[in-house]
Image 1 (tube, rainbow, N blue to C red):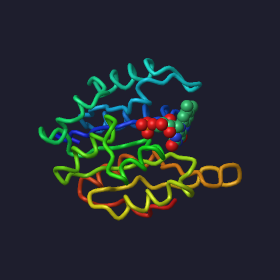
Image 2 (image 1 turned 90 degrees about the horizontal axis):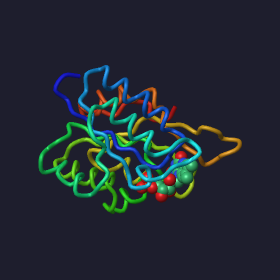
Image 3 (image 1 turned 180 degrees about the vertical axis):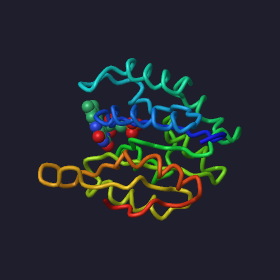
Length: 190
Ligand SMILES: Cc1cc2nc3c(=O)[nH]c(=O)nc-3n(C[C@H](O)[C@H](O)[C@H](O)COP(=O)(O)O)c2cc1C
């Protein structure tokens, strides 16, 4: 979409990083300017899903912008009105809890706080094994808060991980367009 800038904030749900890259490419092809943002844990942790540096390089190559990875770089998002929309996907149980509690001590949570300062939209894509357990209350809290939108989500493995929830990343583009028009894509539960 012409003239729209979205922030794409990534938290430490490392198994979803492949889907993130796919969706960054989709957004780029659709014409969005994309500012990548990462939590400290996402930015600094090598896991069995890959090294941090290789993921960072891929994000920067696709978007053409440097990853925001510090509080100092995340803070201007509000004052400079940098983003039309802020996506947080994947959003971990940890970051959901912080957002619900109003804690802003990572680049991602401060980016959200900074974005909400201007009453601008935030789109959450949850990915957490405790979505129907400890994180359930936090999802409920954010569902009722102004300017938050959700990528529709589902249980991803109800037999082996009965409390796990994950957003359907393939719906990102229609969710972005809906959230930019202050609409929640429905149905939320898939
Ligand atoms: C390999 C690996 C996979 C993980 N996957 C998830 C996940 O899918 N969802 C989640 O909520 N936390 C997951 N975690 C735990 C988070 O990374 C951890 O809670 C961290 O504190 C999140 O920090 P952040 O929310 O600031 O990114 C995972 C951790 C590791 C090492």
